[in-house]
Length: 448
Ligand code: PLP
Figure 1: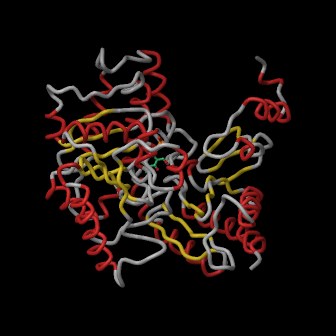
Figure 2: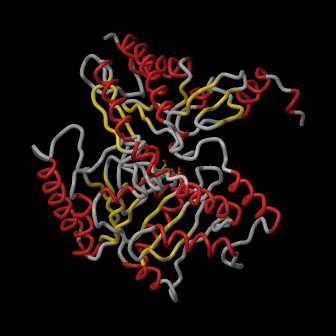
Figure 3: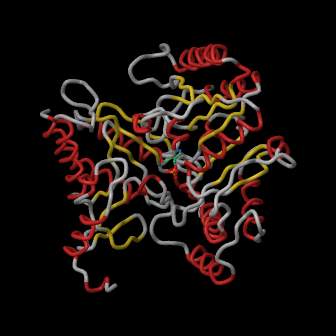
C-alpha cells in the first residue's frame, strides 16, 4: 500500500479496474476528474486544476471545503473519547445535545428525533413511523420527486429513477405536482393551488381516506428542477392531512438547513408545520453521513410504549452527531441561511441572463441558493440525457463546464445551480460567467 508512489495514470488504471458506477453505467465515470482537495467553494484535481463547485456535490457540502475548526475539534474529540455506541444500548451526551438543538430549530412541537445515516434511510424510517402510527399502508408522493435509492424510497420517488426498481414496493401512490411541466392546472398560481389540491383530495377519496398513512413531499422539489409550489399549496396539504388524519411528512433532505434562504423549505409557506420532518445533507455539510427524522410530540408519545420497529447499526453515530452539532452551530453563528437569502437576487439575475443569452436555456427558477434551468433543443423539446444527439451535446457541455473550471452535476433537462451556502457574491457572479461561456458550446452542439 504505497499511495505516494501512484501517478495519476496509475490511479486511473485502478479506477478502471475496480470502481463500479452507480445510477449510470460505469463507463460514464471513466474520465471524471480525480479530485485531490478542496478549499472554500473550490475543488482542485490531482493536476492542480481549480473548479468552482457549482452544486455542492449532490447539493450537500453546504459549508464548502474548509471545514470549520470547531467541527474538526469536536469530531476528533469524540473519536478520542468514544468513537461509537450503538444507540439501542447506550446513551451519549452528544445525542441529547443534538436532539435538544433540533427541537429548538424545528418548528411547532417537533420534539422526538432519530439520527439515521442518509436521506433515504430517514425517509424509510418516516414511512415506517407513519404506517405504524396510523395503522394504514398507503403513502402519497408526487411524480416529480426523489426520495432515495432504497427499494421503498425509490418506490416513493416519482422520477425516472423509480423505473430502476424493476418491481416497486407496494403502497406508494403518485399524485401530479402543483407545478406540472407539460400541462397546466390553471391560468394563475391561485388557480393552480386550488385545482391541484382538489385533485389531491379526489385522489385521497379514491384511494380510501382510511387507507392513506402519509403524504410525503419535498417542500421544494430539488433534483426534479427546483419546482416551487404556488402559494397556499403546502397549507392546503396540511389541511387535507388534518381533515383525513393523514401524517404529513416533509422531505427536507435537500432543501433543509438553509438551502432556499429559509432554514426549512416549508417555511416559505406561512404557518405550515409537518408531522414528520426528514433531513440530511446540509445537516453535517456532508462531512460525515448522518440524517435526521423529527416527529411531533403526539407521534413521539405513541412510540413511548409501542415499538417503533426501525433500527440500524450506525443510527445515532456519536462522531457524526458531533459533526452535525457543530455544523449547525456554525451555520447559525455565521448566518448562512441569511447569506442564501441575500444572494437570491444574484441567483435570479444570473439565471435570467443565461436564459436571455442562450437559446438552449428555455426557462429557469431560483430560490435562495437553489436554482435550475430547463435545457432545450431547437425542436423545442426538453433535452433528454438518455439517448440521441442530445446525449452527445450534453457530454460536450459537461466537458465545457470542466474546461471552464466548473464542477457540478448536470442531468438534462436540468442545469442545477446550488453552490455552498458560504459562497460570496463575487464567487457566485464568477461562477455564472463560467457557466455562460460553457453554454455557448451547448448551444452550438445542439445546432442553434
Ligand atoms: N430526499 C431528497 C429530497 C433528496 O434530494 C435525496 C437525495 O438527493 C434523498 C431524499 C436521498 O438522500 P440520500 O442520497 O442521502 O439517501
